[in-house]
Length: 363
Ligand SMILES: *Cc1c(COP(=O)(O)O)cnc(C)c1O
Image (cartoon, rainbow, N blue to C red; front, side, top):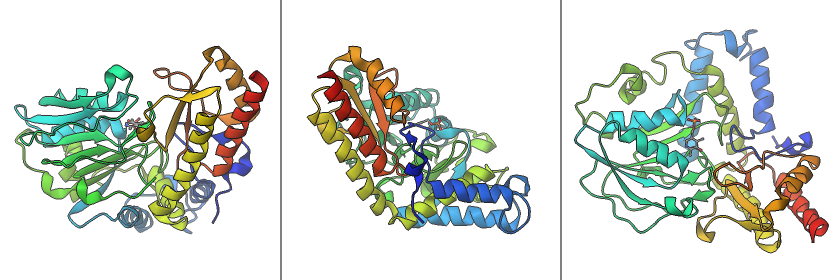
């Protein structure tokens, strides 16, 4: 199994939904045509069939193996995106007069903070908002009388990533939507990890939640059935029909991750790709990075032109070179190259070559 993605010639830097391994796409196509030798499509069989139950069990086991999930945690595949977790978390962990602590490091963290405010009190322990979220605050205290601390490991829009996590006196909840499976993490330091699949582990339509069972059942609020983690734990993510196909694509993607050395293998690849691109951004006088050096994300690389009036010209060159999805998010401007797991280093090399060619053209 190798990643042949770069042979498609379009270099896919999309921020999300993002690039998937070609082998995962190929195997998913096969499952649409004839799933598990059933002569039926994965799209038209019961989620209670033993064949799909095996997919669910394998996907859960794969997550546990790849991340080293300790006993006492459940692995769930839910719907509603990472955004649904913004409300499910406070709904399950916070009573009206309780307080939750939030680290506000970007747009997604801001949205998570806002939702928590609907269910209880929120204390923002630190934010880099007044510098357009271009760094990660590290000097703050998490109050020991709050119910949990919420952070975002990778800020997809602003291009910063947490390379260390604070010691916390309370349960830690982390949105890992855009860097899950990109590096090893110590799951035992977290109480809830969640991630929309469509950045780094699969297609849109499913959200991974890894949750420590013991933190649940401590509040008095009534929780709607579909939003109660305990219901999904009890039913193995099959209280209602799960997003069958999306889960299968996640499983195929995670098999590829395992094949390439697991999250350690991914980290090596991702470090190599990110260093290559950041080195060019730092060397090339036409470009500059937008984030604090030590917080630069390996997943979403944000950069701008030193002469912003050339932006359209560079986008045009990128188009000619089949570099897709590098336009920056409107709140940062410039460019954003997302280097998710499945992006081959050849694509980063192609981007670097385009930047060098642009330098020669515009000097
Ligand atoms: C994309 C993203 C989200 C939103 O995910 P949805 O699945 O679209 O709700 C939340 N958090 C982070 C860090 C993201 O990158």
